Length: 246
Image (cartoon, rainbow, N blue to C red):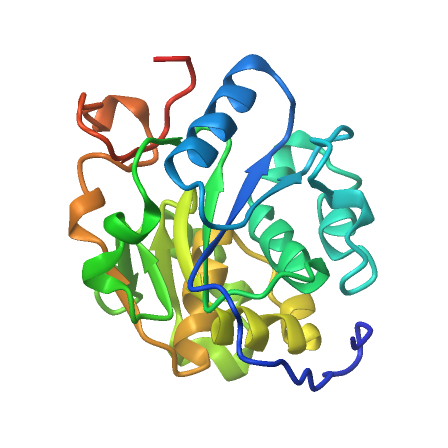
């Protein structure tokens, strides 16, 4: 793996699993533990790897401060896990976990701690299964130039990526192909130069690398950035954000 100044070429065998799940969390509280158990109950046949951005982890999980991809990239950028920075850089936990994990999948679904998942992820994403990046909403700068985070961070985009500005929202539920995560984690120098918000960073990376991105229409109305914008149905599904046990 390359340090901060270079690019490493990673040769991987064909991933044996169709899909895996990274569960991004910061505490081991009751809600977090409950949501992890729901994910595993609904997806018993696929790998589920908890990834902690806090100081404690689940027994079978990974700890952000121990992810040595790019010289502890996430730990440095969040100034040792500071809460006010942890959310904007939570995608670095995903990249670090992907680089660290010995399990290989053709695609990975990243679910944050406040996701209630009671359905197989294969069923949720089946209509957009073959895309490299999927979220409830994906869009480019040209399609939505007034989006708040574009206005905040557009000037931080590296020159070579300026025509590729895009986003995948919300970051709480995203699906990434193995080839997208492989490209991101082997282009360390580019990651180092790109200081912005997680949804904008991953969307821009996908467009810059020529990957396909799609919105999952099924998630709209169920996955959003604010709990007032979603309807939690009794039918199995994926819902975000859900900050209590329901």
